[in-house]
Image 1 (spheres, rainbow, N blue to C red):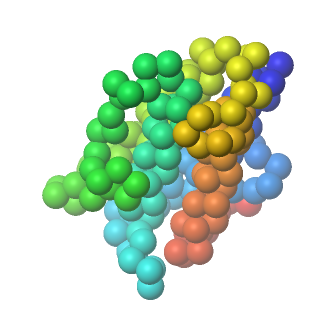
Image 2: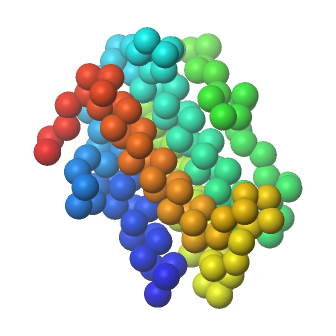
Length: 156
């Protein structure tokens, strides 16, 4: 039951139909290529945030994996990966799909994780595995607001 709720929450804040408002993927789907590159005063663009969110989905997925040491993130540096050299609309769309794929892989990791271990604390992070999954969802909510504050309007 707990896994089902975690997955529903992950999906609600990523795909939409969350009670709190805008979700990450629908927000990103409203962003054109030019807006994806616009940086705020801190130097963050929606595109950089997309890659950052992909990394943290990977991070939680790795924490849930029994062979997590063998997993490696596809981009570098890890926390805020560099934008690709090719900065085109097609490249932007590929990176949104990359984020979608990391979400799908995280979702599968939660599905495969033993329900009775969700309340156990991760040795490295010091929080429960369920807390890590909720943290990934909260991270999506935070960065959805972050992107919206960069000037992206939602369909609320």
